[in-house]
Image 1 (cartoon, rainbow, N blue to C red):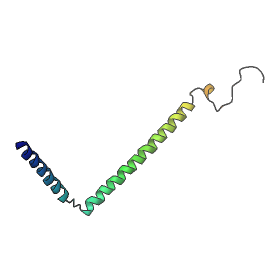
Image 2 (cartoon, one colour; image 1 turned 90 degrees about the vertical axis):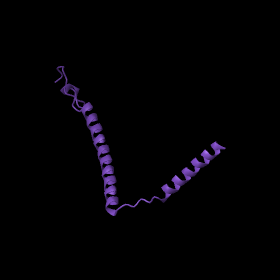
Image 3 (cartoon, rainbow, N blue to C red; image 1 turned 30 degrees about the horizontal axis):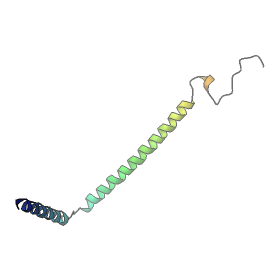
Length: 86
């Protein structure tokens, strides 16, 4: 019996709390809404910027790999002949 009353009490408390949560209405000032929108836009711009920066770094890294410090290792140059067929 005691257990049943305890359970009913807990269920009643949960229902009451749920009703209170549903009754709470979030009122937000228009300036606060605008500030939140601007923050969201800034976050999106920052993500896009970070994506572009990472793409640029990846491209520069690829170019660095292609470039050699030695003139003999450059792929774009013509081969250097060492023989005497001039």
